[in-house]
Image (cartoon, rainbow, N blue to C red; front, side, top):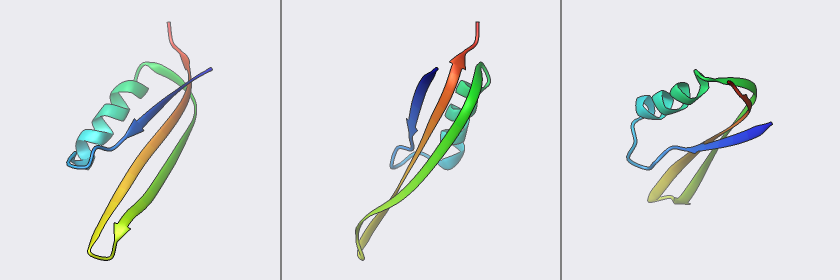
Length: 60
């Protein structure tokens, strides 16, 4: 079993993030996917951090 972690870059559009993840998933035997969203900053400057961890078996 292997893992791959994806982070959404701050200026990256969600559609680009989804495309990166989907391109990876297309060629792997996925065991599980974990998603995490966190907010950081203060009331004047909030940022959302998105991450996905994919557990998979490498396809041959």
